[in-house]
Length: 298
Image (tube, helix red, strand yellow):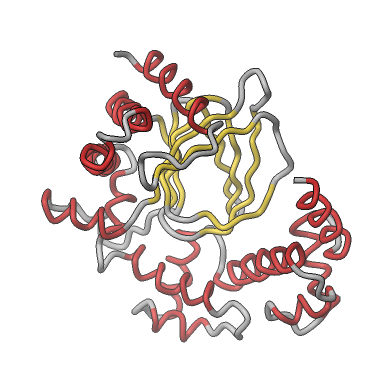
């Protein structure tokens, strides 16, 4: 079966199962269907593989812009604050994608079985990459989605197909990046420790020296590697996390705007409002009213 036929079947499977409310028979399978373009929305992208079957999407990470569409896949290797929106999606031809969370333990287990090829010394991979999907990767994705129609087969066959998908990634164009997710002593893993600390302690004052020590590096190389992975400085990364947390608080609570700013780590209400507007396009008070109204209508 050639790639166009694979994409046709992948589209049909995603479209059918993404529209059903019942749980999928395949644990960890992610399906996305969207029937209209949208304004860029900020979110925290977790380590994931996403294969697009129809339509296209744009993700912005720092100053890097990634466009990807049908027949391509996205790999995210660490938690990254991104802004994304569908660029091709309508009721007649909705955006359709499937994906899997990328778990370090599963990748590490596969690497133990097959051996590894580390990146060249001093090389740090970007935390997000896009490339064309091979026919073998598309075929494995189609077979995984077929199991949604065969729930009795899924517990036995799904783990085998997921392992095959990981193998296709490891041996594919972004193999060096994916391997780094499973290697305990990789540069990516060291930077991930610092990223987790920022995410879990985003309200606290950030000291580069402390983060570098956590990552097992001196300050200058740490700063360079962190930016290579995330396209952001540690301070910029913390700011994105704070603003996204503030937006969640504004949507889910009735706290005063200034109190929300203080709650996520800002010392100045005016600075919080200014940076929030720059990130999301409107002041926090106005955005909160819009977000709550949208949630109420849904």
